[in-house]
Image 1 (cartoon, rainbow, N blue to C red):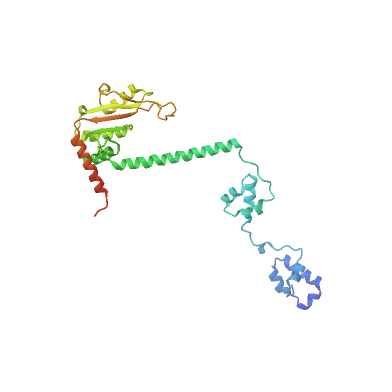
Image 2: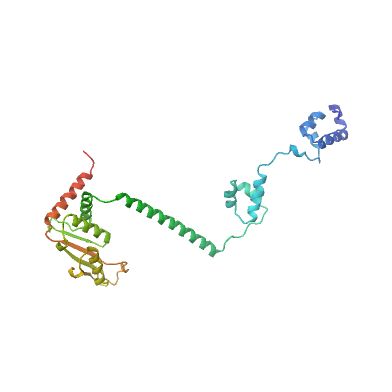
Length: 286
């Protein structure tokens, strides 16, 4: 087709026919402008009015697929937040794409939401429990078998924390220990074994609330200590105040075990001296 010249602008209809013909041949606006020497964009728009652009000139819209997917997810009942997580685009874009669609109703009833929340909390607590157990197990396994020195030092620290101690106004000079934790009692008995203290030198007594099962408590502690329950001294009963609400009323409540070691003045002095050695040894180096 022969190109026109600027002098042809006066023949608008003829120029339009040429422009439409070029458009239908698949030319772009720039190509038509150059062919027809039309530098005025308004005139070019009028010449091409109603004629669609050829497919090859259309730029692909990268968000078309996202828009279609967003609309699909919205019709499935998803919220803006859920669509944003799924597609990774902004909520403002999502709002523009789907605002003509009806707002989805609640996906769950109140009862279902509570159930889901409780299930989530249960899973969280189970994971936390497993983490705690794993941490404890790893720490336990790192300890290994205690040497005699290690057990001796542990026992001294344990006694100083829980055992009876001399006062300036009362010097008894003997080992007397009381505790309600079976594991603590076991370690303390192992410590006494290390020191060569036989069971014959130990006096046992239960200290417990009067409402508890004294006989069963004595049997429990006797089995733990490896002695006969008949060897126990008379239990110390704690009077119960009815206005006080006790929490230690479960079947596992067995009171406290009191262990008194006879002829232990020298052991007590060794224990006390070792404790102060630990205090000095734990301080900063000078």
